[in-house]
Image (cartoon, rainbow, N blue to C red; front, side, top):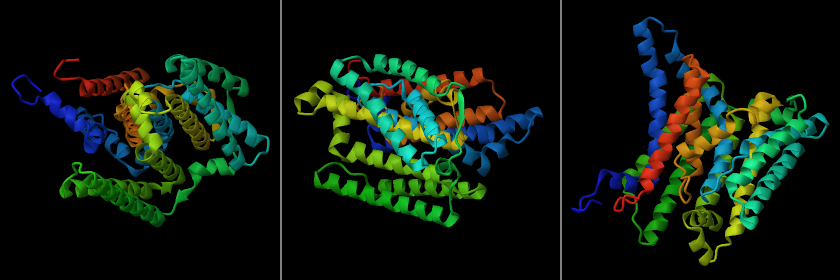
Length: 406
């Protein structure tokens, strides 16, 4: 607030960011702007220059939207897991390498004749152990998470190279490949979408009722049903678009289901509330009776689990496991960038696993659109870096104390 009592623009922005709508608005606007640019602005410019070759039809076509969602699924899976440690104000630099190790172990086991479903369960357990082991070093030994996970990144990269001496391993197991290949029939996809809308409306009404019972401020009916309508429109539009090309893939259904479960855990359970409490102020949380060390270990275990699931999804989509796809490329930076762009604070105490999926779509849309326009790898890195620094700047401004300037 300004000295004369007026509310500044920054104060209004900070207040808006604390609301549920405000937490989603920036990333949704960014996604809409990117889609509008690649879907509308570029083809008009190309037509004016006489170099048009159908970018508009390509980017907004059902086929490209389908491929975009599938390309973003692996990034989103890792970003959802990384969000849990960011809520604590920690970081995990080893998530992509963990996913690579789990995917490599999966490939080795299925090639040795182990049933695909059993191999998946084993690598998920291994992922939890890999993540929790790093959490123990952070929580009980006191090593900063940046150092622990950086060491984990290097160590797991080496381990993956040991498992894959040739750098590549084909995975043809029907169960594993089924995550990508299985498609939900069109009518069932629409039915799932309708169920999601009903559940979202029910959850929103229940939240309103709880807030009203506690004497807290509630959203006006117009805003409440506006959210439900917007959510329903997006869900149905996505499913209809995917059905127009092929159908709703099982991979996306599983990703949404896992995110729903993790979203419920982080917002509606004592463990989830403890994540936000520790991320907001660890010492205060400790004095309030929270077991901060166990919470940290559990959070890193969740990241390990999500990394293992990401490894399974990646092996299913690519039909193979390679060092470059997981540990040697930009997967880690894209996953962390997706979580931050989605609005999860690097300082802890604020964020949403759902926003991480939106952030992954922003990252995926940028890469997809720039590829279609023939941009170089250097251009893609510079644009992604600019978007990331903008997201962090927005987070920093929304946390700054306007009265003190700090």
